[in-house]
Figure: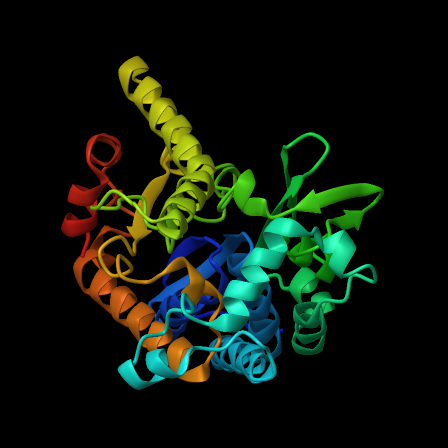
Length: 351
């Protein structure tokens, strides 16, 4: 079993977002590279859940380098599989270097089909190539037995609309596929007689497993769904995109409000919880950088695009560490007072 070097300990909260999860891959690669840091726990949803289990499996097998290699291999496998997909960029987008799929005939056709037929009509056997990749790339015994890094995966119970968090001992391929199950394109994943959809509806990502843990006081949220959009969407596609962004950020915002309220009550009452009672929040964000990334590009898994997102994510993490490393273990760098008033100010201030 690999062990982490002594250093500052952090927990990670990883959002979902399709192939934009490669942004998180880049962030994780940079954090793993920094031997001053150790990762205690990871809470992930959808693509964030996949990044989490791949990282934990790779770390259990080969430490930091093993985790970085595992993440690379997973995303390369996703890209290789996508080469055979009918959803490809249009020739014009290839010429102009635009990674959007808005003009892709395959994407537009599948988008129309998903609004007309359910996945139960189109895929009665429930075949999912992503599951095959996940099961080939990840040893879930390693994930569940990794003592250095605990993983939490969130899915949404269809019957109740509530989040279910799968933690050590219960993190399976089914749990991860449930966490990434978009109901328009995939059949619900059944676990123990219950049907589950994408965890983004109820926790994107879930913070409470990290807040209630004593493993690390520092929670670093890697946010790849922008909270702020500077322009009002006007096209049908842009409106749908913005509705989805708001929906998938709502659970995170609610949890942050609950944490903020708890901290305010503790301060007002003068409650001394000691060192173990502190929660320091940090944000590695995407608001400014992803304004021009279309929603359709979340379905683009070309290797050149994933590498571009990877490099962008590494750059965010590098800049964040340069500015905020000294605050880890001492204070929050995410100012919730300001964030709830104007998230854009926080985005600019935390670069």
